[in-house]
Image 1 (cartoon, one colour):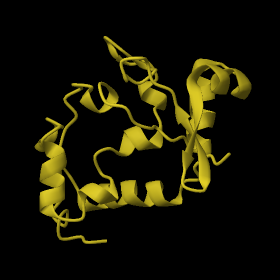
Image 2 (image 1 turned 60 degrees about the horizontal axis):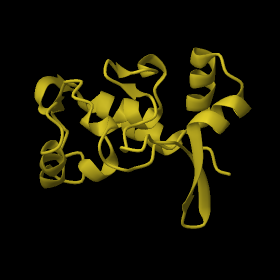
Image 3 (image 1 turned 135 degrees about the vertical axis):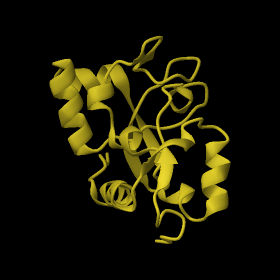
Image 4 (image 1 turned 90 degrees about the vertical axis):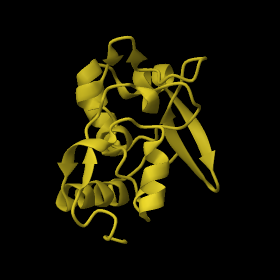
Length: 145
């Protein structure tokens, strides 16, 4: 990991613009912890949740469980008031924008910041918190099918 980019922390405060939740197609891969947390929050069985809110995505030789999207590519849990499962949202959502591809160098961070008004603004997120996001993303067990 190149700690030069975030050795003094990085400014980020979510503006709740929902751009990361809307408009563009993408995948929200779920971990086993995500699934447990969301099931508790929604009071659904695993089968009900997967049938209603998930899809299988082929990634190379792996198949992963991902949330589905609405026809306009908004996340299935996004509504005009924001995220319906915000307090139980997946790891991928909770750790954005502190993902390894955006932390390789300052240019990568700044390029992503062009689509996220919260990046380079607001409070400083310290190095320890950023590294915690990276460790969680690396160590959590994603659901493979």
